Length: 556
Image (cartoon, rainbow, N blue to C red; front, top):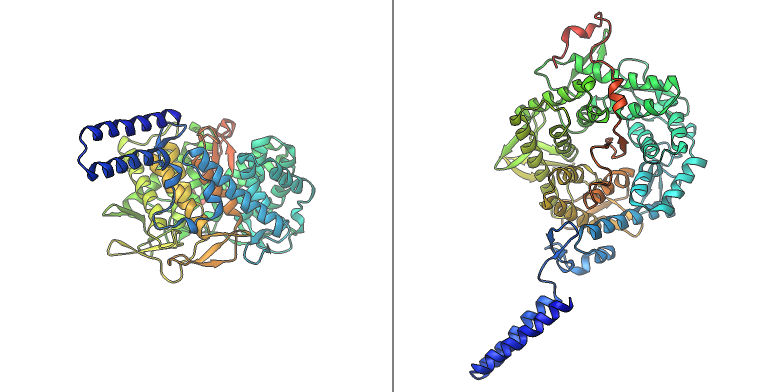
């Protein structure tokens, strides 16, 4: 800075000498004043970009505001943000601090926070504090040690899954509670978490009483009912695979086989030219699928867990059926469901056809990138180009759901007409602070290091700070397709578990949760890659050829 000041002073003196030589009345006097002001502007207004620790030129802190946003509209925490990735990571860390501290102050022990009413919400039985189980690994990863210790103490001394007396989602309990606790065991190797994982796992096992696991569970009674959709059935195995490797309990080790057997039964039922529909059912011992084909809710994470199961097991040859199945299905999805008109990529719905794209579909770019970069991949060079092209295009559409919104926040679903994004219909204008778009952008950053992805997630962070931040946490939105969005009194646990975590990791070094050593479950809980899982793989085909589904074997 001192060197820059010396150069500025020399510049002013040089201009003065030249003007003295060629003084032409008042004009020269004003030219001197103008030139001096321009040079001082470089020094004091930060026109030249600073350079961050990665050597990339970025905007200075004085130019971080959104072009449509005055300084008066920026929440107070945003004023602390500097231009570097480290400073942006710290700003996200402060977002987590505000969200967590608000939960602790107004909803401690409850499942989730109602930030406008400043009270707790009972959304998962009311007594297992899902926000604690979902958010604790984010606290740990961010180094928020005092807050982490408070969460751990609650898990150790107060958590009791037997307190629940109402039916809950088997799928949500697995990805949020079991996944969150399992992640903490992998991060710390502290038996406090494994003990709770084993208690919860013993209750969840009762949902595997048939080929396809049940949808709902009463944890108090350890009883399960109802049939699940494709996502609910096929998004359980990462957690159970991790548990099977950690536990010494032989009964719990069987949970892995039960969770994976359901997925393998679905894969065996498919024809080579078939995209799985979202509604599986059993009939005469066989698994069949019917209904809509979608990459959104009811189906999305089934596909995500195929490629992630392969990676979790160390990309083992014994489990390549997961990777091959994912790649084959994605080729069909790209051929039949991905539309690109004028550079606007989206994934449509089939059976029935619908030209709309859900925010939930934004999980897909990350899974495509994981496949492209997976060890042992058998993708052709053309397949890799196609997967990368679609991942990049869909990520841009996911970002445009935010950048083209009047509020800067994305609606739940975006509609297309005549190949143009037209906005949401009146039923899908809400925003739940979902993670899928920032997740896609995070993966694109990790695999490409294109700085635009950091800028995109920063813009989304700014929109959340501007529109969703309240005195007590962050709130969902009823309607974001307006410059003055209406608020919805909810702060979901996945906002702390996923959205904030992926935002944070976008601005950290790649050594924080490296993707060659960890795989995220669908709730963004990191689980260790473990080659022993791949070496003890469950085969695609059953040992007995009498299985009724074997006649429709998927050729992998």
